[in-house]
Length: 468
Image (tube, rainbow, N blue to C red):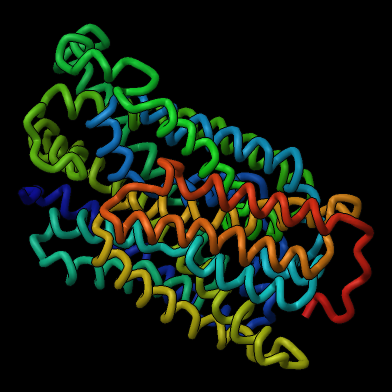
């Protein structure tokens, strides 16, 4: 299956590519500026840009959303919508203001400040995988393959290079400027396509008569246990480096907190648009062989020229905005929180160079992961199932001295909590997909992490040199 786009449609995509190319050259010199400018925009991120960059970066799994809606209907909203709204709300209530107040650059900074350098290094290792752009690079490759007919690996490499180039030199400022435009494009694509589909084919009654009845149930035919585990995986929001970095860059504490609340409203709207559009894909193409391609296939088969181009542009912008955001997070984490912190350099003069090395390393690892897994939903599940137990309890409790555990126990909670979940996950892969005792890997890891944290509770001594 390949899209047959007209001159106007291709022209729209070419304009988008030209904008990204212009942004690459426009922001070329930022990498030579101070670290605070390169990594967190000098902490001048305004409320509108905070919302645009958070909304776009956190919502990149558009093909996975299309696949899940095609298979299970409105359960998509229950699985990939509601639990993440709850997680974001908890971040706004508990963490947002405290994170901005800290004046840090990253999550490992906070862990090192609270529990010492080993905790910061271990946290950086976990975050390197937790913030991997692999699922989104895969989706971007699939979209480019459908548009241009390239081999998947070629399309994936091209997508990774393009989405990394402007942030490589321009830092967070270039990511935010791109996201401001991509925010408009992602909504425009669905706001144009969905009303047209409803006008051409009918509204709710058409959908009810053309999709399975389970598609309008909260579970979509899935067992309740499968649904519930996503509510725990969604606690990843409380350790999500994207949220923290935007909070660190916000112009003040109010912007960090209010921006998250406003973003939740935009996510609710976008989930409505994507879920409804996914239901039309299921109704109009019940025999589609590959549900991952449901949104592109819908555009190819049922959208007219210009609308088709805008819809494709919306899909590309949705994915690209997440690839650039997570590649930037991965680069900062690898370059500053691993290389620079490991080398114990006395100043930050070489941090920006290390971060650029981190961009390349993050992109290469993500490309390998994307081509190996070939399923975004599997990647979300597996990475979240290990990352949340490793980081959730030590990180969230680190923001209040009375909540903290002792440093050695924090390190143990991270290593053993994440390690148990990883072992649980690997054992299932080896044994053919069956978890020990039928229990999802996130449960034992979280339980062990919380137990270790509780055993180490007590007044925590100040950590000498912890910020480094």
